[in-house]
Length: 91
Image (tube, rainbow, N blue to C red; front, side, top):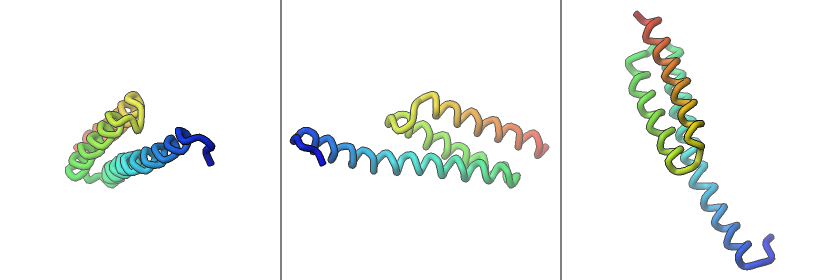
């Protein structure tokens, strides 16, 4: 437990930030997993919409500072690579 008033306030703030960040992080992670699963199943049409949602969630997470900008860019790049491979395999 903190001894100073400022330390107690910092603990309260970090708790609020942690819960807010967790929801954003989990949402982004779930969207990416859903998109990747659809791509592995071969449902390219459904996967395209899911990839758009995943990219949007990653951009939001990066904008809010939950994940770093390059982390979001790397995840989006990997997801797009999977989508392009699935498209060419479907043809």
